[in-house]
Length: 190
Image 1 (cartoon, rainbow, N blue to C red):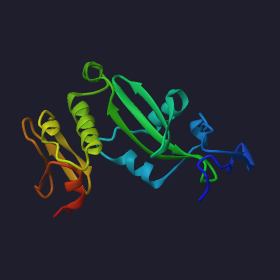
Image 2: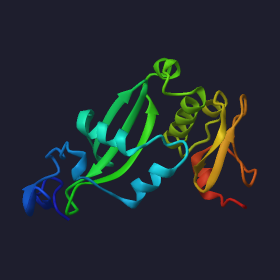
Image 3: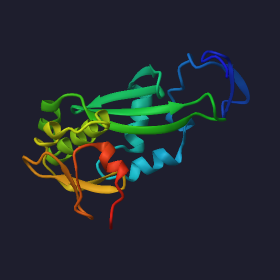
Image 4: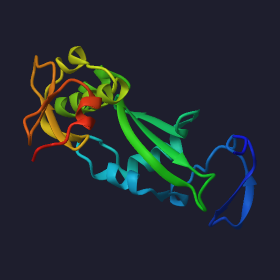
């Protein structure tokens, strides 16, 4: 296995013969240069993700750029209280790629007061983030304050929750879950 800082040859429309770069080199800020992984395309279609090509492009052009040892390079941009996060890869493929993306609440008050987000949107973003951040453990205390009537998919289940409930319920099979792990380990009966 090579060192994380070992030079890697990449090809792009700007340098078809390849250029030497390493993982410490920042990825390009031109969204037009990025291909999309199947995983990223799936994220665009998922209810409750609030990821779009326009938001990904804005994050790449204008967002904060950080290295993350788990995912690689991340672009992040906050708009109306919501942070758009886009993970990119550009050292193992012929062109840079959009790997994944998500939203998270950066400022609850700004998000709630924004004309861009409804209360349902803000609660959905926060619930999805809580389930992902604490995926291995039960989180009834984080689920209970959320009101999410419009189901979104997690682990093959379309989940929602009502005020005061310490679980998410699958809209299709009726299963009740208190963690993302439980959602992902249980097959939806529908």
